[in-house]
Length: 84
Image 1 (cartoon, rainbow, N blue to C red):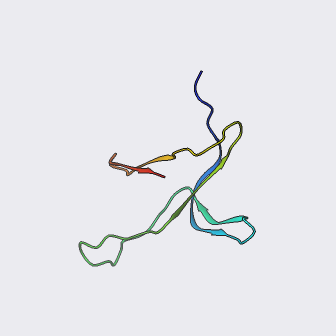
Image 2: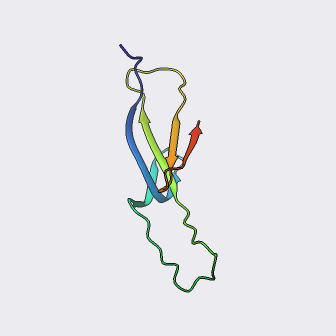
């Protein structure tokens, strides 16, 4: 049997993540798609969007430290690996 893992409670993209002093979290403007217009932009300029990610985990039967591996993939299929 596989080793137990933490439970994923949320994985979201949003405009901003706020964490209060008491530990509560507020997610501002959750996004499931981004749209922008490049009309009127100088030739060769690319619009930029800044987004934040939020991953919520619960330990469940798991104790100790674990590595989280995130794989980001752009529309062309190019992947970027991120570990924390």
